[in-house]
Amino acid sequence: MAAGEVASSPAELSRGLRDIPRGVWALGFVSLFMDMSSELIHSLMPIFMVSVLGASLLSVGLIEGATEAIVAVAKVFSGWLSDASGKRKPLTVIGYGLGALTKPFFPLATSLEWLLAARLVDRFGKGLRGAPRDAMVGDLAPPDLRGASYGLRQSLDNIGAFIGPLMAILLMLWLEGDIRQVYWWASVPALLCVLTLVFGVSEPARPPLASGAAPAPIRLADLASMGERYWWLLAIGTVMTLARFSEAFLLLRAQSFGLADAMLPLVFVAMNLVYAPSAYPVGRLSDRIGRTGLLFAGFAVLILADLVLAFGGSLAWTFLGVLLWGLHMGLTQGLISTMVADSSPERLRATAFGVLSLVSSVALLLASGLAGLFWDLYGPAATFLGGAVFASLALIGLAFAERRRRDRW
Image 1 (cartoon, rainbow, N blue to C red):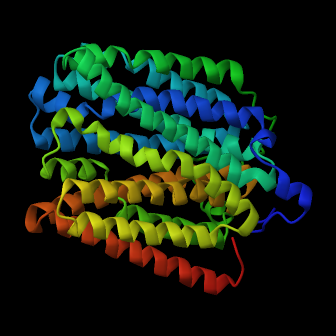
Image 2: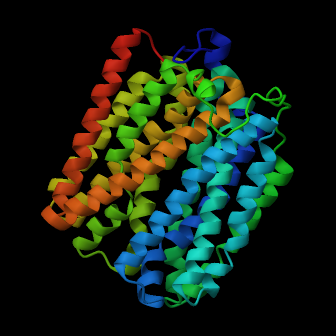
């Protein structure tokens, strides 16, 4: 099915969850287990760095920036290598394996240098696995269930992102606030993740690129062959990322209205309470009615979320904004992955995901820097109003691209 084309036959329209390949389900549970592990750690990371290790806020920012940079570089490299070798699973296993191996190092960390090393290896693993995993979903999914397959993986991923912070809260209460003891529990779902991937996923056979076809991670000829639709999607996704800065600012907004530090993971729980159940239905619906209208809706919801977060004057309004933020993620993230798979050549699918990830990571760093600057200079309302402006620009760009092509993606 071409980009934006919808399923038309009764048989295609009746296909659903039970028709999604077993390998896609397994990849979804792989993401679920790793997100449980990672979000258990990340939802307490600012407290651990500042309160336990004595880090300054500047150190927190530098560490987060360094880890985002290594994710971006690793994604491009792994996407190209996956396409060049014709193999997705080995890189995916190595990436998740590195993530699992680092988990015991977090409770053992006694200095910022130790923590930085663990974070860099963990994030390198994330970068290594992302593009080949996303491309493998596209390889496994039937064309008429591609949106549903990406939506399912995203939903399961975010069920893990919902459970992880919730586990963090419960474990903090049970273990009387001992973050190191809480962190040890992150190794359990990480191990389940790797076992599920190794024994539950079999990738379809793919031929490697022809000899000499990919001498470097990115060639101009390869980039040119991506096509106009892919580049429009990349541009629109980049502007949207500028509007969707680091979710740490959601935590800071809730904290500014008095939410206790130990309860801050509730922000991630609330966001994923909406994100997790919405991604699959959105993906399935996109297989039936097309992608672009749903992406419009996602941008509109992000604008509304930013306005609520900017002008809401209480913790209740903040959580409403967080719920809307989660809905926007459910409407856009799996859908963008589907559209990348739709619009890129199969032989360069992982490279396409890698390039998108690189550009998005750079945009996220810039967006977070601008958000912090606006917050320092003008207050939190300015940060979220800036996000609304960038989201509006992305919506306008999508409308222009749709009018230019005069057909659906």
